[in-house]
Length: 115
Image (tube, rainbow, N blue to C red; front, side, top):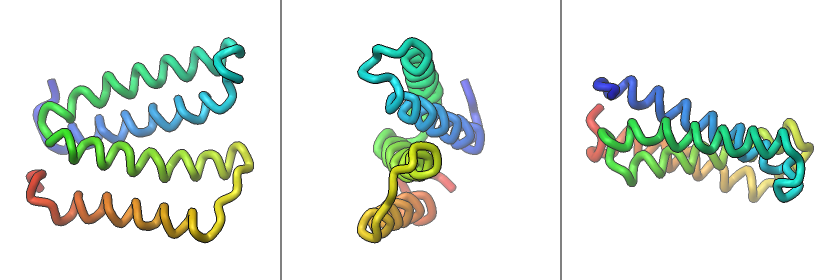
């Protein structure tokens, strides 16, 4: 079990990356009819939740989930834009900027997490 807050944030970051990989692969599964994208999706979602189980023991669940989901949304939107050719319009970019701002406010100013 990780003991330092830094280690738990590294594990949270790894969980976010695994979730982004899984969700990006999910777009290519064709409703789980294609084997390898389906295997990647299932494996990386499982890895993501396993990694997420460590920081959620130390950092409040609401904070972990806010960072995990907010960072995941932004990274998945970027991955979809770069890898799948999905375009982002100005309102989408502004909304993603607000999500990033929210995660930063929680991380930098919340007293719910020891800094």
